Length: 459
Ligand code: UD1
Ligand code: CA
Image (cartoon, rainbow, N blue to C red; front, top):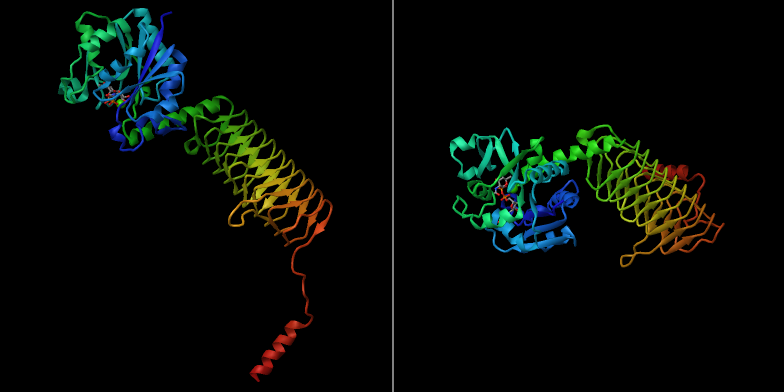
């Protein structure tokens, strides 16, 4: 099999995005746009050349070390862009992929490459038949054979009626591509060197130009502006949900569920409406993700239950733990197996041990909580003194009474008890009881005395 070089074009300015950020770095379902053609290229090609514009170090960084990057210093058109890749290309088949068409499937590109090789064509264009061809290059055929491609802005009214469009994905025989590119002139509306003109050059020279029509024209959708970005994201989101459902995940309302491409979800997990799961999140099997939860870069083991409206960021939840409703796990929180974190609880950089409970209205930050601990309602770790953060340690089986303030740094020993309403400023030894609150004062008959006094005053 001959060697396949994928050339990915990403040097365009992306003007229509109206953005300070390079177009191909805009995120689509959790990955930058450029990650999609890169993934396709990695699946099929022996080498990958990425053409970027100047100031595109960020794009090169995202691409990774297996990609040969070349810089197109002046934006003189897609043909000029491909020419910049020449020194890095192999001598056999060249596959050109635009950086801004993330919906192209590996299967489609595989079919294009296979057809190109089988037919020994000079060039093979991937085309699509679409209902609204406005804006795209049109494929001009003669007796069924592709003759040339005309850009929308250069097309006559008759040509504009053609529904077969150029997807801007092509295979070329390297030996035919380079001489043909040399013949391309910038004699068009934009004064650019169009890669599309190579097709006309080759066909006029008697070269064999083939076309493969996409089975699903939706794959040809490009991202040139933010409206197209949203439209493409909607399709990609549907694909992700389909993949998850095919893999055994129940999604109660796909229309309101947003799961990024980077996420994995295990068998028999049920996802309720209005859930967002993003980043490098991993959700295990048989979990329940309740209404309105937002899970970001977190790892949930198996049989975890998130009751409605939990917000989790960079946290780890172990087997069979239950969270929510309405809890907030800030980065580096770790909830142990079978633990329970209840409503209106905020955790930050804290570990809750196996089977421990923080059921209501607490803030636990910079804390290590052991196993079988009960943290009463309204307990607060006072971890910040205005300058630095301090740690709290609560050892196994301790019992923290409701409305306790733990002034860190502080340790509550194994099996110790804290009386409700305490402010704990000193370490509590294992097995001890600590009560740190003003002793209660009781004044018998006080109310009656008070009302008598009031009457005397009036009289
Ligand atoms: C291009 C095709 C058009 C096709 C459409 C499909 C050309 C001339 N036209 O139009 O026939 O129907 O795609 O979506 O190719 N690029 C560079 N350097 C440049 C110019 C462009 O790297 O100097 C890259 C862009 O980053 C992009 C690709 O080439 O990935 C296509 O350029 P773009 O401006 O998006 O062309 P379209 O108008 O979409
Ligand atoms: Ca484009």
